[in-house]
Length: 155
Image 1 (cartoon, rainbow, N blue to C red):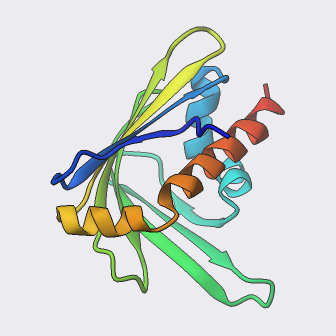
Image 2: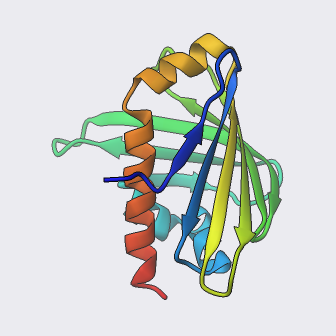
């Protein structure tokens, strides 16, 4: 099955671009990134903090069925323009990967469709390539598929 989420990772660079078109209005797609209840549904994680403003912060946590924390990530929101832009850092705790910088741009295509472009900058090309060796592409595509499934119900 073809992945709807596209990843462009040019050799030798320390960044990549993720692009996805959604069958969702722009405002609804943007809500998926700023409303904790919606984030929790499509990401399958608990939102501990989500301050949607310039110089705000965020923290997500995932636990196993026994309550043990298996994943925690956090960052700072550097820029925030409603329905347009989120610029944030992303850091996985207890991970060998250094912090990364993410530029999320939301674009209206039609009244019922929109596009998300994520430009992610890593510390080095090597770090980016290590990330891509993980099931990264498959995971982001699955997450975006869940996002669309959850939000279509809210349309």
